[in-house]
Image (cartoon, rainbow, N blue to C red; front, side, top):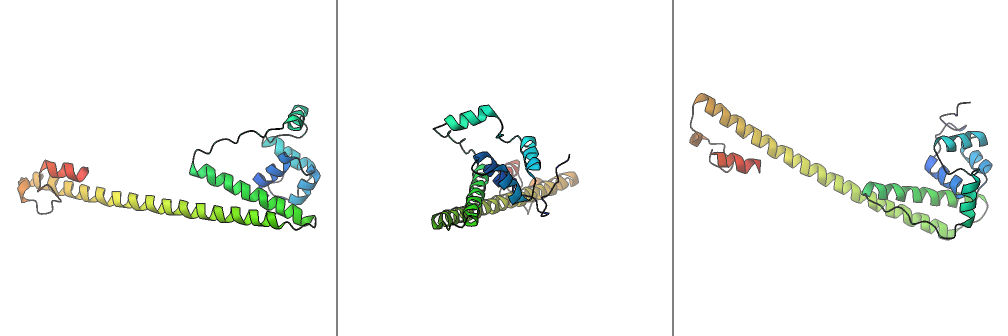
Length: 187
């Protein structure tokens, strides 16, 4: 049986948050499936297809029970990876907070932690946008410089084709129409 592309509610579940809930083993599979509008079998099939850490693997259960030290997280090697992890952490915290609130408990500490994560993510995204703007600005300046160089080169080639001397150049930007001027423009 094919799994639906969307849940019974019509919206695509947040699979990274669902995976986290599934692999943490703190909730029943039926509870998770119901919360996203899927059946238990559909959720398990999705977990298998997505290669999640399965709950039915006895070796995995033994390792999880015996594990006393949490493994070291993989080091972050890029800004994109850091943002992705931060987003996943925010989603995880929100899911836990929603679960806590659904069970009738208000967790001010959890709310504050989620707010702090959200603000941190917001700042990181602002910094990333500033970096993108700076990169676009540098690229734009580089294109303008390249266009000026191409235009100067075209003018010089046209003069050479007409047999004019290089010293008659009135549009030169630093080399007075010499080969050195082209070298400076290309630098």
